[in-house]
Image 1 (cartoon, rainbow, N blue to C red):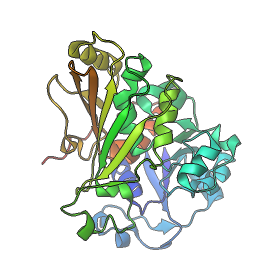
Image 2: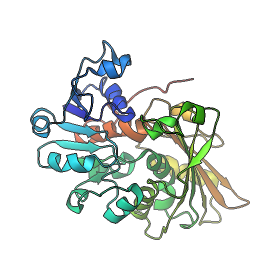
Image 3: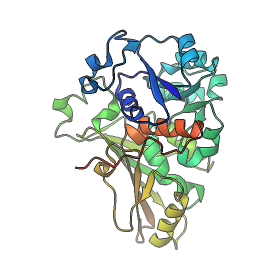
Length: 346
């Protein structure tokens, strides 16, 4: 299969290129950007010198439709709403890494993203692509909306509990932390080295745009979930997300052994979800550079409260790696193809 990447100069786009460069079944046919057209990619990212000889091209939808099988969009929110409608007219598969097609409610999107929403007709065509839980939908789709990084870590951590109605639906508290790359390539005051180094800060308190995405997915399994409390923090590291999730058990007699067996059974066929042994918890470094999500579990019998610790690499499982996993499923090849990387350590 031939692929095009739109938005290759961002962190998610260049990670897509890194992973696809070693994919045995998908070739990178072309790379596109709305700026820096005509430049060699190695001029923007010198680390690909002698490895990738492609130049940045303008976005020509008709040309793309004639030349590639799948288009990856790794653009800032608000851009895909103008590109996807044109791509949908063509016989090309789409995987969108932005947040533009994740929320099905247009007013909710505009409230949280502060941008004009896509039209409902196109939103209805988008399949939310969390492979561990939406495999059949992805197999039958031509248009995937790739989940956000925080929702990926959080929903994978919560799904077995929510689907089996094992927690008090009003008690979900999510304490999430991300490396600086999660904020994107364009620098801001908070991501400036002098501000982020040797610092630990909370941001977008009760306002993060991933809140409605998490709630939307959880409600698809349990409509009684009214809301979640979700807090995000910036950690002075490049990559990684740790989502620590707290919820009250709805079953007084639930044991750690039962919890552990539930998660092992839930993810027994999921090649990229690893459940840690009882009494151990994952760290972000243990999934660095890979498509893995590692999950640790605990239950406090004094408070009857469950703690789930879920970690991912925000640029891989939280973006580019999951997009490739979705592409594999769409094209009917093994979902871990091109993604079997051992984590970078230390």
